[in-house]
Amino acid sequence: QSALTQPPSASGSPGQSVTISCTGTSSDVGAYNYVSWYQQYPGKVPKLMISEVTERPSGVPDRFSGSKSGNTASLTVSGLQAEDEADYYCSSYAGSDIWVFGGGTKLTVL
Amino acid sequence: QVQLLQSGPGLVKPSQTLSLSCAIFGDSLSTRHIGWHWIRQSPSRGLEWLGRTHYKSRWDVSCATSVKSRMTINADTSKDQFSLQLDSVTPEDTAVYYCARGSAYSFGFWGQGILVTVSS
Image (cartoon, chains in turn orange, green):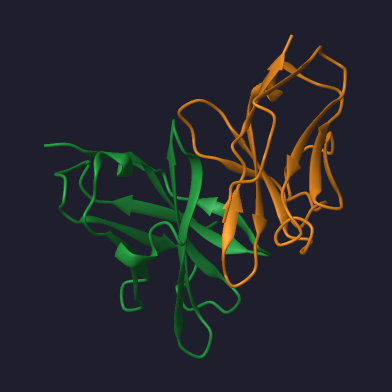
């Protein structure tokens, strides 16, 4: 049950698009369409932004989108806004009733 | 709206047992196809999934390999709450502990989090 791999940081200017990757293995990300993404502000509780690779819960702006190719999932934030500056974590179901998280990516809006 | 309210001590001595509870409001512990999870977060380990309980004709528990030998998750349907016990804690177990409601293999609702420090 190794953690998923995310870049420690990502950045973009307001209005631009930024993509955060989440790399796993053929036993987790590659095996199931059960990747989710979470946004977390400092000192706050994580918030679900994307479930099942591409599904946006009610209330999440459509600027946030998810995708997957092979063992790598991605979160894209389009039309970056200052309020998007936060930490982002991916998670994947890994079979046998086990879940795994990524190490997190700090998104900076320049 | 589902709300999860956590309770438990913020300080535990090394080698002792960490015990936390999570009370559920706006849902039921026995709701089908819903899992009830424990997750922790520390600067050194990031977010770490610990375990889950859910009802599927009987109560089923799954745990992360890293804590499986010393972790227990219990469900109390009379109070609609579930609990975490982590035995033989060390300073490495210092973290913010969250309970969370799982559906569609994701965590849609989280408790407020409790910082648990392991120190003598």
